[in-house]
Length: 428
Ligand SMILES: *Cc1c(COP(=O)(O)O)cnc(C)c1O
Image (cartoon, rainbow, N blue to C red; front, side, top):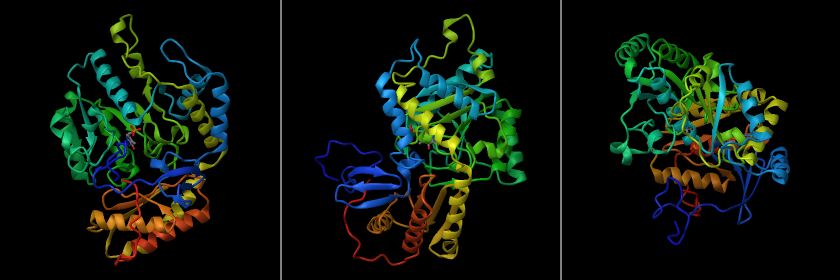
C-alpha cells in the first residue's frame, strides 16, 4: 500500500496491503476502474447493491427527495419518507414487530437492540438479566459492545478481547444429545441472560457458514422457553439473500428484535433499522422520563436514505426476487457441483444468492494470487480467510452469473498458480 495515502483502509495492514482498486463508475453488476477495465462485481459491495449499481428507480427517488428535504433531525421532527418507511418495514415483518428505531449502520442497529433488551429487563423487574449469548462463528459488528458478540477465537477482534464485556458463546447443537446439553445449560443460566443475538442461516463474516432452518427454529423455541430475547441480526440475510425476504421466516419463528441494514437502501446510502416487538416497546411506556430509550444518533432517519429505502422496497414489491434468488441458487448449485470432488477444496456452501468455496490450507499469498487471477479474468472477488464467495446483485443477468461461476470454478480448480499472474494491485 502506498504509505502516502490518507485513507486508512478497513481491515487492512497498511504497510503490506496491495493498493486498492480505484473505481470511477458503477453500473448494474459492473465496477469500472480508472484504467478502463470493467469487472463483474461478485460481492455487490458487501452484498448491499442487491438491485445492481445505479438503479434508476432508487436514484430518481433520491433526486426527487433532495429537491424538498434532505435531512431533518428526528429529535421532535418527522417527515413523510421516514413515516412511510417505518410503516412498510413493520408490514413486512410479523405483526408484533411494530416499532422501528433507525440508525446509520448495522453495528449501531445491533447496539440499539442490546440497549433495548437490557433496559427492557430492568423495567419489567428481571434485573439480573444483563448478559448476552451469541452463536459460535457469529459476527455482529465492529463497535465495542458488538465486538463482544463476535466469535472470540475465529473472529477478527482478538486484539480487543480482554477489554470486552464477557458474554456467552453458544455452539449450535446438531444432535439430540447436544440439544439436551444446551437445554440444561440454559436452565442454569437463563436468569442472567437478557438475550441471544444470532445471524440466521448464514454466518457471513466468518466465511459464509450455513446452518439449517430447523436448527434456528429449535434454538428460538429454547430461548422462548427460558425467556431469553431473540435478537435476529438480519443485516446480512435480510431482503431475500437466503431466498425468503427474511431468513428467520424459513424457521417459522417470531423474533423479539430484528436488525436490518446492508441491503436496506439497495446499497446506495447508509441506513439501518432495529425493529422491536410490541412487548418490548410497551415496557418503555411510563410516566417516568428515565424509562425512555436514550438513543438518538444525529443522522438517524435521514430523508435521502429513507427515500432510497422506500424505492428499494418498491423494487422488492414490483419484482419476484424470491424466484430470482431461486434461479441464482440453482445456477450456483449446478455451476459449483464439480468442485465438490476436488481434493483441495474442503467445502462448497450455497444458500440462496450466496455461494462459497472453501479451500484447503490456502496461504494468504495463494488467496491473493487467486484474487489477482480473478481480476485478470474480469471478476472482482475478495476472500475471507480461505473462502472465496459470491453474493451478487439479486437481479444479476444469467449470462453474467454464468461467467462469474465459470471463472470461479476454473480458477479454484487449478492446483498450480501460473507465475505470470499480474502483480497489479487488488484491494485490501
Ligand atoms: C455487516 C454486518 C454487521 C455490521 O454492519 P455495519 O453496517 O458494517 O456496521 C452486523 N451484523 C451482520 C450480520 C453483518 O453482516
